[in-house]
Each structure stands twice: as C-alpha cells, then as structure tokens.
Image 1 (cartoon, rainbow, N blue to C red):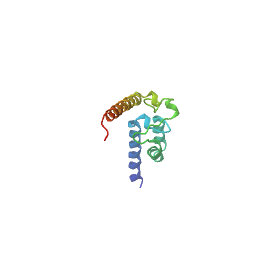
Image 2: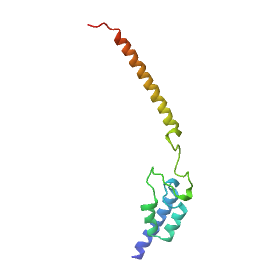
Image 3: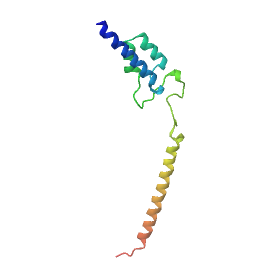
Image 4: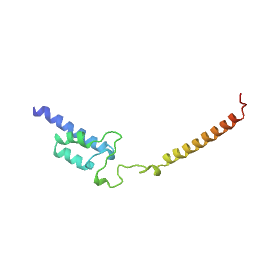
Length: 117
C-alpha cells in the first residue's frame, strides 16, 4: 500500500508546488505563495488539498491578503469618476442626447410647416 500511496503523494505535492509557483499572485488567497509552499511540504497530503480547495482563487478573481499591502488586487480606477473610459462614455452619451434633442426640434419645426386639412 505504501508503494502505491507514496508516488501519488509525491506527485500531488509536486503538482501543488508547481501550481502555486505558476499562478498569478493576485489569485492566491489567505497566505503568501511562500507560506503555501511551506504548508504543502509540511502537510504532504492535507497541504495540497487545502491549497486546491481554499488557497487557489478562480480565474478572473482577484484576492489579496494583508502582506500584499493596501493596493494589491486592485488594478485600475477605484471609483467611476477615476475611470477615463467611464467618463468618455458619459461625454458620448451627453453628446448623443444633445443630437437627439436637436433632431426632435428640427422635426417639430418641419411638422409645424405642413398645411392642416
């Protein structure tokens, strides 16, 4: 039984360590990468399982832990008024509203010139 379990545990530890090393730092949850690697080596069966269940964030998910500092996990604007894309969309929306109002005004002026029956 030991001959069967030992290679599986070794492969699990290697796979977990490689995964921890390769994953983006912002997807690591709760502990820094080095702490996860130590945990995987100290607890060869439970460590990798804990990493895959708890420590590994999903793709697209950004997480942080206190050791990363206050700006970790946040890339880009914090508020909508800090986002240049958002501000650009607001300006485009306002310009479009202005054009619509102008066209409605022209249409109403054209409608006033038609003879009544």
